[in-house]
Amino acid sequence: MIPRQIHHQKGFTLLEVMVALAIFAVAAVALTKAGMSYVNAVEGMETRTLAHFVAMNEAANMTVTQAWLEGSAEHNVEEQGHRWQISTQAFPITTTANVRRVEIKVAPIVPQTDKPGDTATILIVYIRSPAG
Image 1 (cartoon, rainbow, N blue to C red):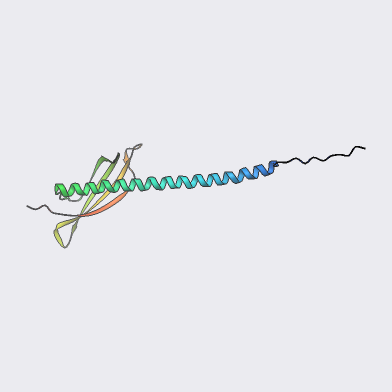
Image 2: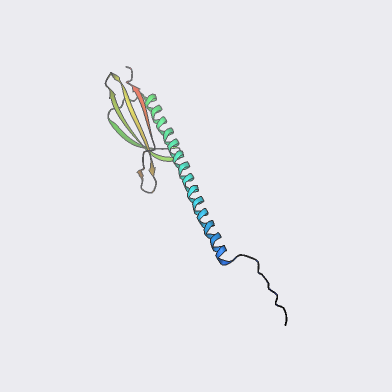
């Protein structure tokens, strides 16, 4: 009688490989979601920052031109490499007739629809009636 030799194979079973792949897939999905969340947050901050620059430019323009606003108005501009809608609304101040509170809202114009998106920033300034 010839003695049998038992050979043990080394390696992973199919079940072990499938479990490892499932763990990797879950981790990859979680990392992808985290990355997308980060990218969206950065894009949102960039949009709000650029919109704030646009609002500050509008406020500076009001100061330079000594604009005296009544009611509300809207217009579109192209600044910072994007198109924006600027909405202004003037509110009288009850304690003085020669100062107005002006609310400047800036929203990016969505290229696909050519309509304004959500308001990205609001800047409140006070203007004084022009002298003379």
